[in-house]
Length: 448
Image (cartoon, rainbow, N blue to C red; front, side, top):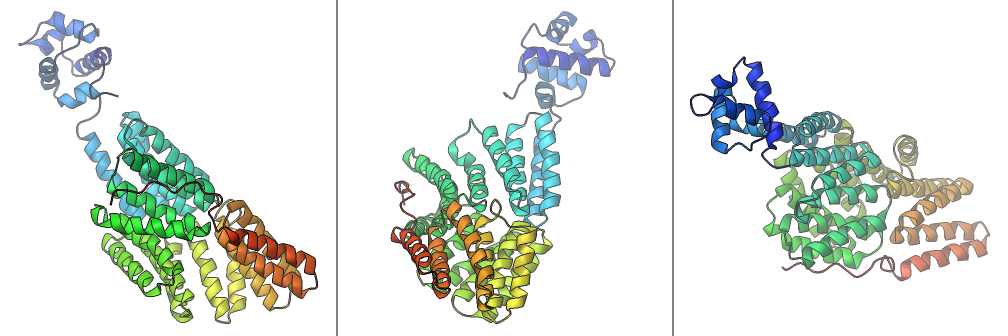
């Protein structure tokens, strides 16, 4: 929509406002115009000049902008201030309260046809839905934000596109998430739209799906590009997210000290920005780093802190994923009963094949290990098979190979040698070309 409404709409508006104020056409016109001109204008038969509209607005006692657009003066400014408040609420971990704020803003923006505010409100609603684990709703909000921005350059649409990709990723649709992110990267790089914030957001977001698909080399390359782009980015929260994502590739390469240093940088930025949920995610990742390094007491402390912070903020899907990591650490520390209870709670409340599929598979894998340690091979096999089904659907090659080994070992120990060989062959097939056979050419390189 243009800033100025059409003559018919403006004419009706002038007539309504004049009537509400009890003014005649002569009183509105004098001293610069005639009553006949006002009559023609109210009928929509003339396109009034800016000078005429400013005169009429002054006589009506309203702002010029309100007269030509129908929107109250300072409305856009007020809505943007309220958007900032909603963003702060979400940053503080109150996703449900933030969603209410965003929904009210969306309704108001739609009534006044403020498309840019609609797009931001829909983006915020999508982020809230991701926090509360409503992945289908999140995807619909992000798609709505993209539609609202259909006529603007790609860099402005990247946050919504990235949100849509993340919703697919969390639902276990890794390949499609990678396709969305890589397609956007290619379009940005090949068309010369080298917006540092947009590129950094996409490279940081694609690292997780790459790692889960077993495409470590491509994840490392994305991390390298992200680190190179960081100094050009203007958003500190975006830089913090990048450090958190890059830590995964550093850890996979055995660079534990560097991974921890990246997470420390991210955590400090999140503390400064008061981003509670993101800070909790940093504690979660640091717990994972400590667990990989065998520092199980530190890992348990970090993961418990993350879980407390996320549960307080009602970030249901993320808190369930942290609980799975914590259960792994508890089992390794000899607290298997507590670990199993935690995993059963998570699977009954939050996770499933369509919602947090990778962590749901991890929960079943761990329950299988706990059952096997307790001598219950039948329950262990059932959990392994359920996990295998979820990972196959998601295309998580690296995790599939490891799970096939566990299942093969179990089958071999129970005397089912042929079935064990089948499981091993399946695992080897996934490890042969980790995560590359399902991916096309790598995205074009940004100008660094």
